[in-house]
Length: 244
Image (cartoon, rainbow, N blue to C red; front, side, top):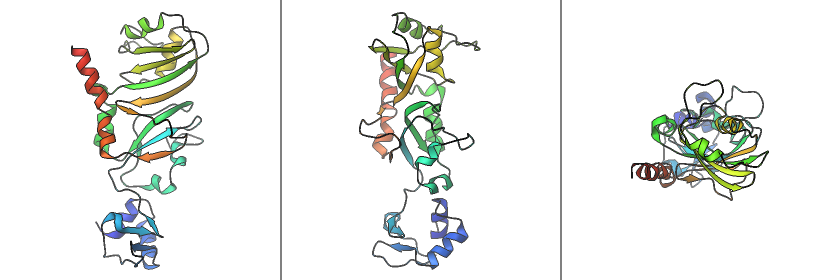
C-alpha cells in the first residue's frame, strides 16, 4: 500500500491533505528522515509529526464506557468516538462497536474494523457470554434466579422467551447477570419483570475477556492476538459444561 493511501486509511486526512503533509516533511522514518510518497517503510518505522502511527487494520480495542455516552454517531450528544483520537472516526475500514451499550450503561465495550470478528462475537449462535454487574433499587426477593434461568421468561411487548440467564447474588441489592444474548435493554427489562428497578448497570466481561480493574472510565487500549482469543475461551468452557 502506498504511503498516501496508508495514512488516509488511518484517518490522518484525505489523500490530498496527506500528500501536502508528506511534502511538508510531517512524515518521517524512525531516524527523523522525511519520507517521500513512494517510500513505505515497515509500519512501526513510520512517524507522523514525530509520533508512531496508529495501529493498522485489523484493529480491536477495549473501551471502558462511561455513563452518558452513546455508541452511534447518529445519536445526539456525546458518543464513544469522542473518547478516541478524532482521526479514529475517519479510519477506513471504519471502527465499529461490537454490539452496543445503552447510554446509561457503563463498562466493557469492544470496537473493531474487523467485520468477521465483529459478527463472530455478536452472532446469536456464538455462545459468547456477557456478564453485567447490577445495582438495584430494592432488595432481591429470592425468586429472580429461578425466573431468569427458566428459559420461559417473556419480556413485555415480545413473544419469544429469553434464553436462560444466570444470576449470581452479590448483596442485598447487587448481583451479576450472565447473558447468552443481547436484546434491547434486556437486563433492565428482566428485573422489571421480576418487580425491581435497575439503578446502575455495568458490563464487566465478554466471553473470557474481563474489564481490567485499573482501566479508568473513558480509557481504552488495543487488544493483542492473545487477548482477542480469550474472548471465546469462556464460550468453549460453558459449552463443555452444558453438554456434560
